[in-house]
Length: 520
Image (cartoon, rainbow, N blue to C red; front, side):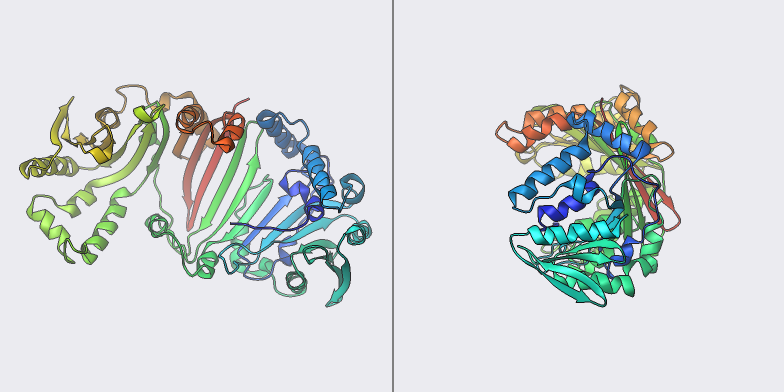
């Protein structure tokens, strides 16, 4: 969770990093704003505060399409000025800020506080006119209800005080805001000594930021884990490690690239020396039912399952099975877990339905042999022979398996079936059988929104998809009218035509691209 308690007048100075000053600007200049971030900073965000040309046009186009706003920059500045007046610290953006506002701004979160939240940010804003910037600082200090005091540190003069005890001043002709005097001094030390910009890990990671972005965010994943006492959800850690990512050493950079009818986010993560996973699951994903409102596919499922089974066999199941007995016990029953894992390749999940009563979906596994299909048959026979309640055989269109019906599962049974090189575990027979029969009906590859997502991702293979209108229909049926936040967001959510995610690899880098399509 990110907290901030900067006064509105401070935020007004950096309004454009939140897409505020979308107008013309001077030619882009090189930025050294990361030089104001102390070494070891966990999160660093840098964005254009005055985007120009096509970037500015795209931001305005999205604002008009999504919210009917013709001048997003003007709207945000107006809101900030109004907030500043309410706080008793008025600011005229056009007269006091715009004349000196530079090309970029950087926001640094040095670490985590005692509650595990990111610390208050240190903000550095490029200035095109140092004298005018100093005039803005002096004016804000003078107008403040609570007094500011003059201070100096390592030859840098600054102001500290106000209602929140914030500090602001010019450092190397760059405007720097900090939550307190100590944080401001750390920025001064970074500017004159070692900083985040000097660290090899930061340089290597930020170098992978995408061209043409509005903003780039650097995250030290390993540092976040270390400062949070390694408090990461076990399932999240397992998912990262199974994907070849060592979270304790990983870093990442995310770039936001607005288009005229889409929002693109590129992510690149250094895996900490691990080899990035590879594989193309777009064909499997595209073969899933065409009415799916969401679908996801992943490569190398068999390898991940093998690792999980090895660990489970080694540790055992407390109160149920001692260590090193799981595999041997099941093998005696005709179920060879190692053979099963060795035969499985990729996995996909899809969900469908327009209401709670019609919800369904399935996990689909691809196999390189008939071992998985044999296991489904053996498991069904075992459950029926042991007279497990609610178990019945399933046989339909060449698919065979079993279903399990239980009150805790809801109105539909859990169905496990196999056919050819596929195994499906579905909620309800329809979903399970649809997952087994690619091409028997309309598939995602036939879905216009899916096609648009694939096209937008370009050479990046698609691995996840959300159909905006179908997902919205389901959400409207599930969320009660009393949920005002959802009702307020509905007009904007309805503008989403699709969400597409693609993944790729490059040496030790895992890459991902997320694109949100906006319906005009």
